[in-house]
Image 1 (cartoon, rainbow, N blue to C red):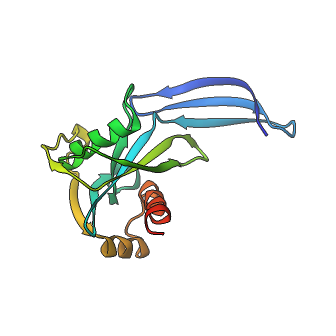
Image 2 (tube, one colour):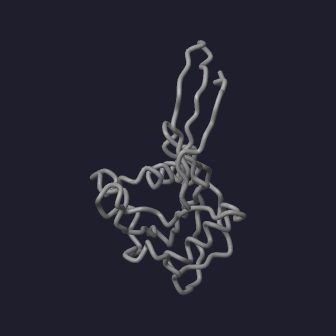
Length: 176
């Protein structure tokens, strides 16, 4: 069931995303319109050391609170998801890894956005200097025991949808 798109126009663009306005006819022959946010894609790394997970704590303007998340960020133009994941791990946590295992991808906010998040696992590291971006100046990373991480999920203290979905992928594939 595909929609017949009549027009598609970019109505806003910035370095992080753009918004397009589409008009269409649905399969039931009714007309409609949609505003779609398009992101270049992102990656997330579940960094695991023994029974600890690496989490980032950073202030998120959109929800006006500090949030606990896995290391991750956008995929730059010309960069593969794996290259982006390695770069983000170095930038945010000061860690290098030679190998990542791909867990899967997540459709992020698919009712309003076209965006895919690629999820990786890393469990071997070497130290490197963090290269935090300007808008991540208050980002702090910490190793958290898995039991504490899962407790914070149950207590609704970890609310980032991508982190929660990445963890669900991990549980379904790694803890069978």
